[in-house]
Image 1 (cartoon, rainbow, N blue to C red):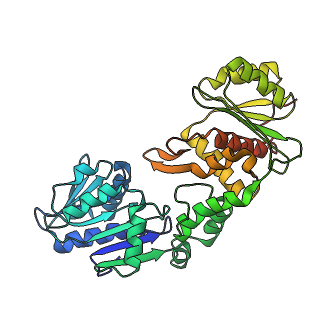
Image 2 (spheres, rainbow, N blue to C red; image 1 turned 180 degrees about the vertical axis):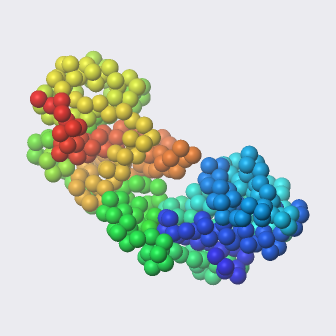
Image 3 (spheres, helix red, strand yellow; image 1 turned 30 degrees about the horizontal axis):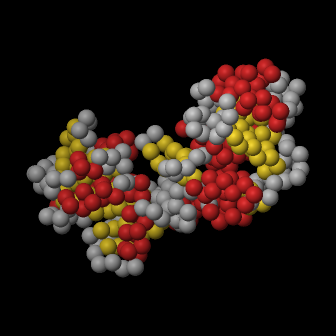
Length: 385
């Protein structure tokens, strides 16, 4: 953290202590160069994240060394300098102040406009800045600036901390890293623990992995189904997987509900397990399916957390080639997979189609993979006769 360059960019593994190091750097800077009327900033993507650093600095400093304002999130040192902990969610609120030193936390997830605003506040003071964060694809300002700093851009320095460095320093343990490697999608693991950007930016499956999975429909019998129900302009989509996880059935239509219900029952039958979107209007539909076709239909409610879970399951299946993506005979399957993305929001990770695209096929495929996983769990399918 003590790099002499005015602007330092640090791409680092998760939980390597980069936040603690940046807190120490900002405090030392404010202590050594601060005075009454001089402001130092900590900027994070949202206020909840800046609050984490605020609380950590309060705990780290001796109580006699500072005063604080909990609602406005600032600490005043004995020399009169103030350290503010701010949100970058509204970049316009960052303009106007003269700042003598700053940290941008989770820089890869901060809006570029937040950096533009912060950079303007450092102009008159020529204050230094540390930018820290995990790698989050290639389509963000932090990644681009890191590459310029890595190439030796004047007054900038670049630093990279990977999981092995954290293990060597005693910050993390090797067993935990290996556990993450085995359970996370390869792209996610490489970004979070090896600081390696994926070529596909925000695509959770990986374009190269999708390509490796492309295949025609399997001719084996369907072992389980996933159904995403069409609402308004959306499509009803059914994906059937064989025992090896390959796509063996693909159904997609826009029809009135009575016709849709009858078609689903006809396609699935009364014994093949089927996981069905039961969000909102889907609840009574699943109840009807269970009543009409016995209990091989199980409802699944989409929420931010549940959607993340099954999308990560689909990502693992794609990256391990444990499922298939249909070839040109069903081109829309691959198109949806390739255009799907994830974004970090104030409430968590949001998986969604890019603007102007549908995600019905992706959701049905993820439900089918979840259904296949559930076949080995009698608690999930305890209703089956």
